[in-house]
Length: 231
Image 1 (tube, rainbow, N blue to C red):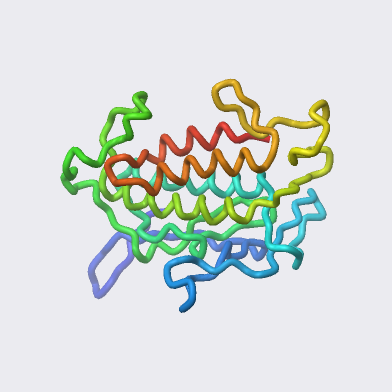
Image 2 (cartoon, rainbow, N blue to C red):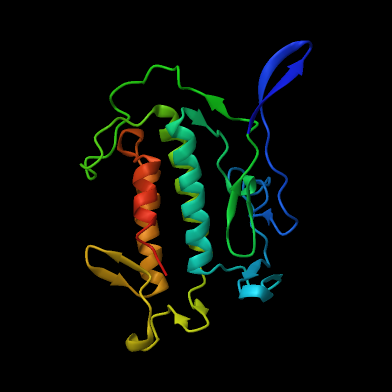
């Protein structure tokens, strides 16, 4: 919520954020001296998403497809909303994302955010890639920067996907019987039925996001592609 606050007898606008429930935890820690620019994920981190019995476990550091795609979809949509209003978060990394047991994400820490709605668009180089002709409007340079950060997040979470992801009857690894397998994604009529193919698809999104600035997509484009990953 946007509120008015008094600072040294001057009324200014402030951002009031809700207090998150105790079941929300940081997705990762900030970079260390050894990782330098990459966030640090716990060595033994895993979320057990088992309905009412959901709880954190200390087992192998892997995530389910549903967990990862829910995080990515939520953060991409949050960034899309911010940039539609000319606001850059400025620090889209895993250590600024809080998640619950189901992978519901909350984008936190707006200390580096900025409003650029009154900033003139940069050169015409910052545009949607030609591979996405359905979106011809220019992408603001600030959004291009944020898209790159998101692409790194996609890469990191893809590397943490459980190669043998099973959730009850929803079997998604390639050794399962095809008659009992639920589709994960559908792209151009092709069903993605194992984690390796999901990794390939997410890798494609990550590459688009981290490419040259003039070739990076908008968050709207990203949101539409992530919607194709469904369970």
